[in-house]
Image 1 (cartoon, rainbow, N blue to C red):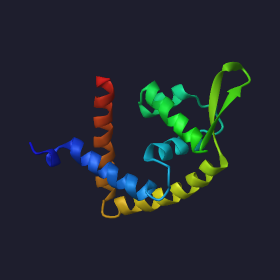
Image 2 (cartoon, one colour; image 1 turned 180 degrees about the vertical axis):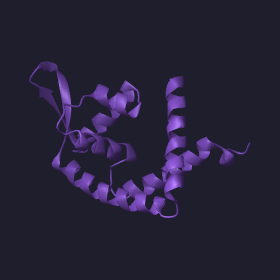
Image 3 (cartoon, rainbow, N blue to C red; image 1 turned 60 degrees about the vertical axis):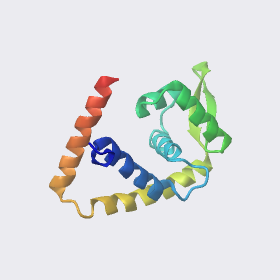
Image 4 (cartoon, one colour; image 1 turned 90 degrees about the vertical axis):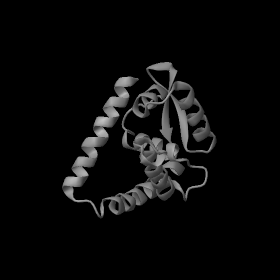
Length: 142
């Protein structure tokens, strides 16, 4: 089987196209930073810790540490202690990250519209059903 005929290759290629379209205009903000900013923004009413990020994005603790350190260095997040446990540091967005989030959300809506433009409702539904099956299969293997 040729690599370009595999699901892995096709999904990776599509993901790369989407990342370039959505996050390509923000210096120093990787796609992962963008997704994490969105997650933190959508959960800003909760205390979010590194372990929550590990779970949400299915990434290893060491990877989360590197991402969080870089985002903190770039002024996108702050780590703040919580009142109920001095050992824990919640992760909070800065104003800079909130501004980037608004711009990324606008761009994501444009890209989403572009991706769905030539798909029927049934095709979109089938796409999500297939992706869900694949995600479940991959998570079971972990």
